[in-house]
Length: 184
Image: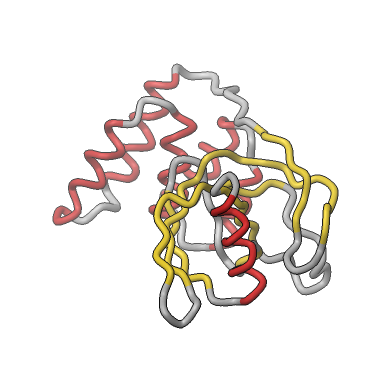
């Protein structure tokens, strides 16, 4: 599914309302099979048929079909994947895929990098939303933490897309620090 400005990171959730006919058909097929489909940020206007290379694979965890034929659903991110060759284009585009994993190439111990990121986020969370900070503190894997931070704190769809494509954890952390730290 190509959605303008949308990114689905692993271990995050994305609420969706499905109303386009082609995506209603895609959802019906997914519900009959694996309950999974990918969310890709819509390609630039210059190359409308070229999807972004690394996208988020999600599983439909909740789906409520409406009387008007639309569906409200919750998609949970499972994995980053790379879209390979196009299998078919109608009624919706389908690709063969391969999983891609983050590369843990951080120099410092993961616990130190996690603490630094949480400290940066803490200053951005209003006191009334302290449960968000508590949730972040529960995460013990840097990859999971960066995915949550991308979803919760990065407003720019282009920045989220760039972070989705960044497999190096070291580079992803550096980009997050730059995006989250106000200029001096």
